[in-house]
Length: 220
Ligand SMILES: Cc1cc2nc3c(=O)[nH]c(=O)nc-3n(C[C@H](O)[C@H](O)[C@H](O)COP(=O)(O)O)c2cc1C
Image 1 (cartoon, protein in one colour):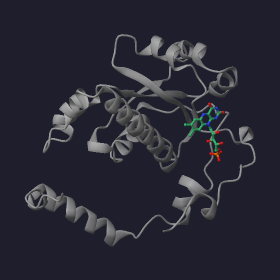
Image 2: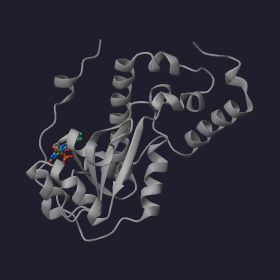
Image 3: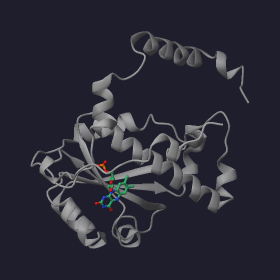
C-alpha cells in the first residue's frame, strides 16, 4: 500500500530530489564500473601484503548499510578480524582448504546476523512497528535474518570491489565452532566469512562458466 501522507513529507521530497539528481548525472555504471564490480572481478584465494585501514572498513560499511533489506531490518553484524590473535581464534572453525585461503589476508570478516534484529525495527522502520510479528515467530525471524544478512553479505562483496578492494567469501567452516568462539551468550549467529584485502592475482584460477540467460531465466 502506498501511503500518500508519507510521500509528501519534507524528508520524502528530499529523497525524491536525490533520485532526480543522480538520474541527471548518470544513467548507470560505465563499462569500467561494470568490469570492476562484476565482469572482471574475481573471488580471491591469496593476498598481497598490503593493509586495509579502519577508515576503509568504515567506508565499506557505510556503502553496504544502504543496500535494501526487508523492513529495513539490517540484520547483518560484522566482526572484522584483523589481529593475528583474532584470526587465530577463527582458524579451528575453518575447513583445511579455507585455512590456507585466509593466510596473509589483512582482514577476515565474520558476516553474522542478529536473530533479535527486530528489536531495532521501531527505529529502522519507525512508521509501522512490525517487530511483534517477528518476536512472536522465531522461525520467521530467523528466515528473515538469514535471508537479509546473506543479501548484505553480497553487498559487502560488491561494495568492496566498487571501492577497489578484493574479497574471498567462504562458507566452508563450522558455524557452531565460530559462534562459540565469537558470539557466545549473544543473539548473533555466523552466516559466512569474507576475507577482505588486495588479492594476489597468482592465486586466481580460470573463470568457471555461468548459466546463460536461457538456462537460468524465463520471461513469461
Ligand atoms: C557465500 C559464498 C561461499 C563461498 N565459500 C567458499 C569456500 O568455502 N571456499 C572457497 O574456496 N570458495 C568459496 N566461495 C567462492 C566461490 O567458489 C566463488 O565465488 C565462485 O566459484 C566464483 O568464482 P569467481 O568469483 O572467481 O568467478 C564462496 C563464495 C560465496 C559467495
